[in-house]
Length: 107
Picture 1 (tube, rainbow, N blue to C red):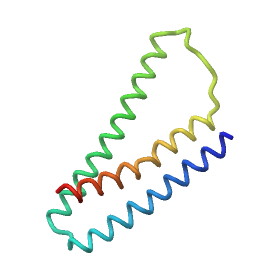
Picture 2: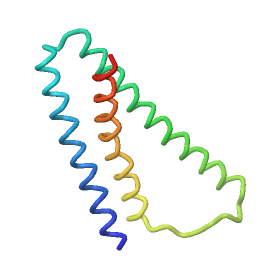
Picture 3: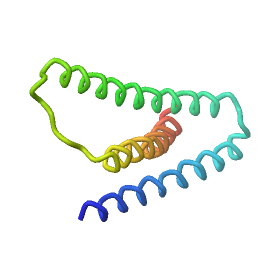
Picture 4: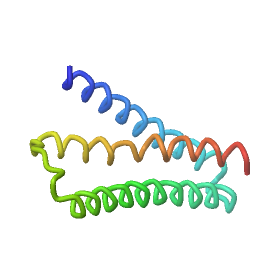
């Protein structure tokens, strides 16, 4: 069951990777890479950075909680940790895709 969920999440992330890339290329040609498009891309990249900053903050807070409370201990397999990191990194693309769409519509 866990592997099916992982596969579905990777497929979703892969879909948004392709969708964000094709949307960005299409709009870059459509807007002829003008200042408006550069502003949209800049704001979208800013949102992606905020996503990574939020993920980093959550990781730091979890690390702090586990250091403060010594009796919180459990075993986690390295494969599971790497899988979660991969999925978090892959979900950069839905954030980028939806922010591009949002700023394209609202600017």
